[in-house]
Every structure is written in structure tokens, then in C-alpha cells.
Image: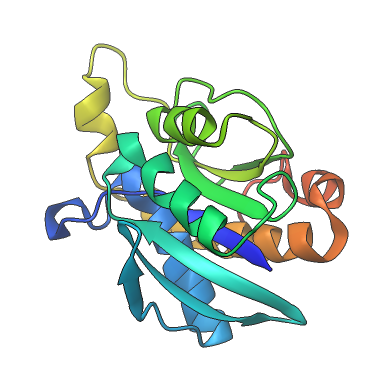
Length: 192
């Protein structure tokens, strides 16, 4: 069984922001595989279903971004999921261009507070992650305002295509492992 967690902030005012791209990829997976987020506990909303032959739990933490691990760890503990093998986390990445995704089998938080909290809560950094590019913040602008801002103009179709790629990357990780997903998706820009 896999836990697939998309990171974001729960309030309506954060919908569609760069920081909530993880939530949007979870929505994409829900739509593609007919999974309903119909359970609410462990400081998260989640739903169980199947992607291919794999049982999955799709998760949106409700803890706000910086405390994401406080939702993910209790779910992983309750369902006895091996977080080194069966956890995939989807988050935004300000170091990637809009339309790009980057898969990693493990690694540091890279300055992302949501990933940092997950690593702290789990006590390791050996989980797969799919990072979705939201673009670098413009020179002189505030980081918080950037990640809590909305996609505009030509970025909109690119981000839609990259959400599709991120959902496909999650499935590739489950089916063939993170190395295969890295080879297939890293360095590829979404096509519009």
C-alpha cells in the first residue's frame, strides 16, 4: 500500500496558489482513478482506492504546509506503511521552471519547510518525492507572496500539463521505481 501525499494549505484562499500544487496533483489522481477524499482524521483528508494493482491512500494534510509531517506520520503509522518504500510526497519547487518536475528517491528538504517537517517527523529523508516547478521568484519580490500567489498568463497551461506529468510520475514510481521515473520525467518540460 502506498501513501501519496500532496502538500498545500487547507483554506479556500490558498486554492490555486503555487504552494498548493501538491493538493492539485492529488485532485488530478482522484479524478483519473475515481478515488474520493472522504475520510478526515489524523489532521488530514484522505481517500483509499486503487491505482492499477496497487492500493493507495491519497492524502491532503490539513496542518498547513509547514507542519505537513504532523499529518503524514500518524497516517503512515496507523496503516503500517514503510515510509522508506511506500510514501510519495508531491510538493512545489521554486527552483524549477513552471512546467518542469523533478523526482527524487530521497534527499534533503532543499529549503522546503513542508518537506523539512516530514523529514523531522519521520526521522529520515528516504522517501520518494515529486517536485513540481512553480518558477523562481522575481528579483526583489517576497518569497511568501510568490508561493502564495496564483499562476498567470502563459504559466497556466504549463502548470496544467505539469500536474498531468506529476500524476503520471507518481504511477511510474509505484510501477517501476523512482529511478525509472527520474529517467522518464526529470529534465522534461511539460508540453502544451
